[in-house]
Image (cartoon, rainbow, N blue to C red; front, side, top):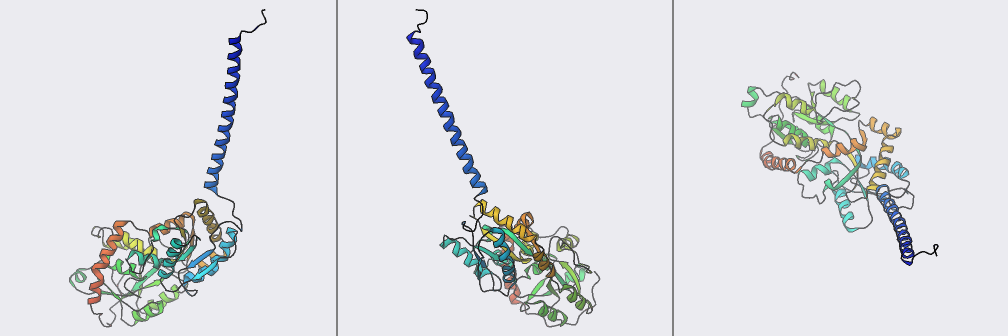
Amino acid sequence: MSNLIPASSMMRQHHGLALSRRLFLGGALGSMAAAATAHAADDILVGPAPTATSDQTTKLIVAGSAETPCGAWATRLAPDMAEELGQPPFDLTFTTGWDGVTGANLFDAQEQLSTASSTLLVPGTALMAAMTGDSRVHYAYQRWLPVLTICQPSVVVGHVSLHRSLGVILSSKTTRIAVSTPTGPELPTLLAFDLLALRPLPVSGYATPDAAMAALTGGLVDAIQLPMDAALKERLDTLATKGFVPLFLNTVAPPVPTPADMVLPPTFPTILLQERRTSTPAFLPQAWQAIASAASLKAALVLPLLTSPAKVARWRHAAETCAAKLNLQQIALANGQTVLSGAKCIASYGMATPDVNVGMALRRWLALNLPRWRSIPVPPAQPLPPAPAQ
């Protein structure tokens, strides 16, 4: 009789065993669910390994013809980028227009009307067109994700005293600037002279460095903007024999590395700090920085904003690998350009993306000056005064 187990005790043991089994099964299922969730999260963050058959961008829209700087860089970058991404060669689509607006509009339209993704190689002039409120613009470049940029700043050369003497303040003399158009790539120079209170007056029709140099040496303009390319030293030497000197760089920081055997002038922010310490208009110095950064962009490789994080990461890694290749570095160096990727690329593109207040200040400045510039007759050529001391 002592070996008999009460029925109530047996029921409690059975109930305990059942409860243990349920806890075990529940814990196992919970662990499996947690593992599946973690694996899914890893897939979202990392993405599938790149393969030739994976869903990757294969169409590259070039905002310009094959003869433009963007077009030339597209043919050089495309093979290396496709190789690093592990995908077939890009389908290059060249467009018309020197400023890249047509290609940027096409990129925006295809992203809205097609499920097939594409990428864009665009010059900074397309960003400037959007900043200045060009009616042709139907895109928002702030919604693009940069993966690689190619930069080349410019230098302003002329026969102008940057110091505002009493005579300059009392006179009504304007500073004639050679430009392609008043809102073209020379816009940073116009705004720079205005910030220095030197009354800039754009003289349109000079879209090439040679044409601008001819206008300067012919007394038709007082200052010009030259790209810091491989021909800069020869051009500066030629102009120096006629009394023209470099005035300032249209960039926030001097280029690195500095061209050999060249003494570069200060950057414009340095000149502005020296000449106008307390009386600069609100937001316009930041507007100069934005348009100067955009004007220095020879080409920017960008993706749509809604591109998946995994794809953006793959593209940026491929761009960093390409930017470090010796052949591309040599091409850039020979042309006085700099290839940027990674954090430097994002920073350079971000400088060309001003906030709302800065953008509105720039457009107000243009709305005030464009009608006035059109109403002022261009002064005739004048004999050159003695070269100012710098």
